[in-house]
Length: 449
Image (cartoon, rainbow, N blue to C red):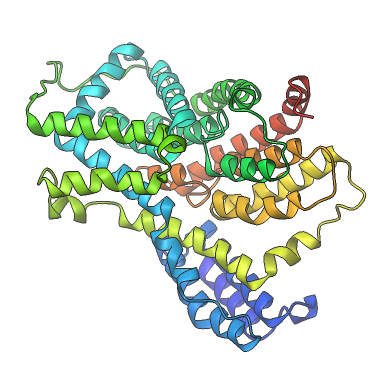
């Protein structure tokens, strides 16, 4: 059904079926590609990464010639670049760090420590893993935090019977808490950083400490709510016992020390990006170069990396370029009736729009599309509007393509799309509702207005 719907959308759009909307040809093409990709991603009519490559193909073979025809030429790198962008490099570095930890059994060692912290209770294990992931995501890339926690949790998950609902809950808790943790600091998620840049342009940026004060309570509340949703929806109960009761022994040799040193250094450099000025993607190349250059990892490990996830996220970023370069993003937002809305109404309206878009494409791309338009509005104050939009982008998590953590955990092959959609949609609605109600009051209390 998904393939049929997507083919119908493509055929209709190619025949100019969206002409009655009054859109120029290039915007009709952008609209067609976006709608078709959303349908295929939501229905999994084909593997997710195939849809991403289809977005790239159509942007080069259909949209770019249409742009050339109207005198708005863009280089092919505009569409191919997202597939090797800073976000993709960050993903690659996280994958390689996880492979290095696994090679030295450090993932099993850390998992054993996590087991002792939770006392073997599945409910407590879920809560401890979610709290840990959220805390890491406040200070690191949420992708890097997810990669590390997935490495730690998979050995424990594999000890549960195949098909056990608790396996799904433990895995879903990782991306959900990584997304939620990103609200806590300005560096917690890309939408936060984008919003902060626009706020700096109008001299309205809150300090780092104020951002933590307005975001961290929401992190605590949403982690508790999400834990309750997962334990109830998937009936998490009982105990998990390790299959091997003997303590895991680590050989503290040069390779092990290299993995620990490189991992710690990479995390430290991610934490101090503002000091040294190197982007997170550049820092992520360090473990790639050192692990493969030293021989710690080889060609076999390189082949086993989740390249399909990299293609999936590249497609989400490419779709953002399709929307922007075709001009359809601006048209879409111009259709929104914001003239008579208050500051609060504008925040809710743009926030809900951002949440919907971010559900079917990269939240970073959504932030890049929505925030510039919102920042151009002649409203005061702008801080709650832009921060509300950033939070809405981060909280959208019903699909693998919605956020990098979702895509990363979905790549484990342990999750069904329906489980991610049900739990993710509920948490998304609750998170945005909390941000636009209690959050509004809390932000006002701390002088965000």
